[in-house]
Image (cartoon, rainbow, N blue to C red):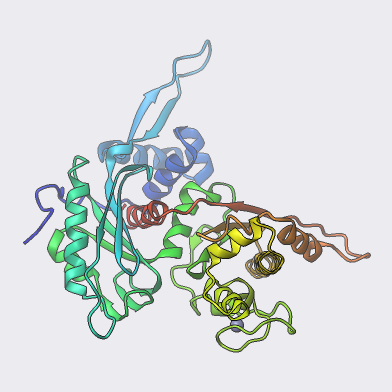
Length: 390
Ligand SMILES: [Zn+2]
């Protein structure tokens, strides 16, 4: 049964490369004249006119005449239409589907959530039942907008071909095709993505990507996550699920990570590792939240542990920026607020950037912290889907 078939509109034609480029500029930088757009994208007057006509005809953009000035012809201003597309984005955790429905500008029009089915005896969350939960969530969100154009699902782990969950870290999934059952149930295009890659795509249009064509994204929370955009192109799938960066060395005399490396980034910064060390020291279970609370109460051990985590984050930022050759790193995640922009982190970064006596090249980093609630994660999935279906 097609759950949302009543609200799904017939698939609009995909945009050409030129149309997509103009749409992206209108979405990320606001209204612009045909002339400005043509100049920025190196399109001839004739090509730009063709693209503008097509976008207006397809309902993606509208055109207004600027009030005529004393001299010269009135200029034609193109503006993207927010309601031209609506997509559902859904972030899956181990037990919950968090959904949003967004317009073309990635603006959240409504949110909803639903419990995922219980895992079976092998710890695997049933796939067909999960697809049903997501389809129902999408149908519910679809009723808040005129029509739906697609569904995006983001998930922690490894995803291939925008459809196959090769490794679903929190769901016990291996080589699971989530797109097909979801497409069959809804009749809509379905895009499955790694959650951090989806966030990077969202940043490309509506965050760091507006000012930097190359940037890195680091998430610190349940695990460390990495996303990258190079020269305007998002890296769809990391080669190592972030392993090389997570386990880069910080201090060879430091604590061991779960893999046995002494003093790697993960040993200092990964939540599970930090909690295991703090629990072993205290002789009772200690969570990351406990550490934050203890530090606020003046506890020296907790303070030292969080300072060490912040220093490791500083090293990670520098290593990633250097390898990616960008000055722009975005930090996000549940645990990042207490670590980012602290004296401990900033001192490491300043020290790593300090040039030698004879060196003339200077560099500074543009480090921003993005908020990251489950709604933000879901929005990443929605924006990724809009980019894929346009
Ligand atoms: Zn390690």
